[in-house]
Structures are given as structure tokens and as C-alpha cells.
Image (tube, rainbow, N blue to C red):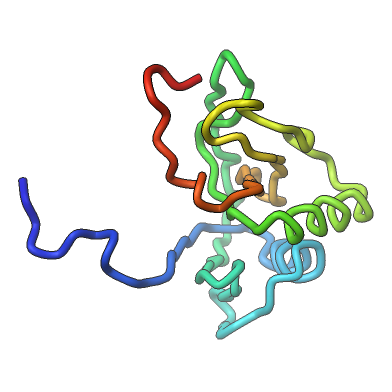
Length: 153
């Protein structure tokens, strides 16, 4: 199927929204620990600037079920996650920030795909509601969408 305007030529920002039974704890996590600034808010929700993208957290009265995570059996990486690709310097600053808060890493900071197309540094944490968040970086940001020849790892 051919579209008139390829998606890669459109400009926009990403938006994600999810529920929290303890929005005050979510505000502390995203605001204080990750350093995201708050945007609009009401008694029912709060917006955050998640590294230039809009994140909305909605207050719910019942306990939020922690998301079930499925893991890649070869890497133990949670399949269900969201995240941000930071530049090299910012990723290392975030690693230091997270270590200083003594946060538990879901996946410790590491190098993935070492020596291959797409080599990257990656780390995973969980927010208070169990959502997996990945922070990754590439020494050369052109490799974010690099295509490997043959079989990828």
C-alpha cells in the first residue's frame, strides 16, 4: 500500500498515557528522580515533559495491576516497555543520576550488540506502577535506524 505522505516526513512528538493508583508517587518518580518537568494537571491527571514528549498519567481509584512483562529468552529484556534514546553524554548523566538515587535497575547498564550494527548502551528501570522504561544511547546517532546486512543478532 502506498501513502501520499511517508510517515518519516511528518513531524510530531510522541504521546503516551497510562494509569496510576498513586499519582503522588508517580509525580515524585517522574519529577524528582527522572527530572521531567510537569505540565498541565488536574485532580484526575498530570502531564510531564518526558524528554520532549508528552506523558499523561491518569489517577484511578483502584489498584493498578502491574503490567505483565514478557522477556526475550536470549537477552532477558522486557518486551513491553517504552523509553528514550539520549545522546551519549546525557545517557551517562542519567546513569549517574539513577545510581545516585539508588534505584533498582531492571536491567543494569550495559552494552548491547557489541561490535555489531546498532551497538548501543542500554539500561532499564521500572516506575512505581511497574512500567518498564529503557534509556539507550548510540555513539553515533545515525545508527539508531541503521540496517544490518544479513541476520541481525
